[in-house]
Image (tube, rainbow, N blue to C red; front, side, top):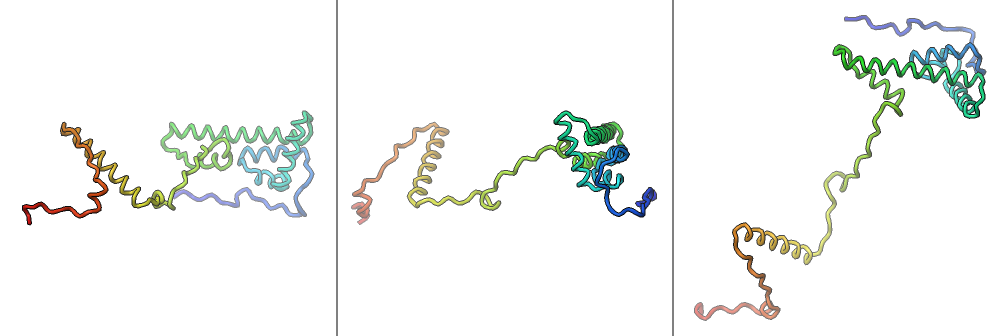
Length: 195
């Protein structure tokens, strides 16, 4: 069984720090860029440079604003270094993903998961919204109909069935006989022979 990596390997506590750095210095830029290239995570890169993720995010937004105004400053230098580091990181992950296609011993799950988590905008397929399920998943809701409408629907389906059956048998469909209103009200008379 392979030995598990030690989580404290390479960790060194630096005593004497009273809080995070809030001013960007030029010596912090390569540290941030290196850890972004290594991990792709802003929080780790910020911590390795002695600052916070929020502070690093503000510096990056200042860099974007300065770059939009075509000005160069330490913030645009940080922005450029971070963009290059992210590009290096994702190029490395893409290369690993491509290697899993030809190397059957490599498992692509971790690489694809990591890319989808760290770069969801570029490495995930947008999901389609599920269609609204009618009747809370119990099928379509019932439709209220009057007894007359139900009888008319059943009659129409019966007539259509009889017509199709007659076509299959090659006979002419009988003309539908409509009962007269007078015969519907009076009881049917018995034939004289049955009396």
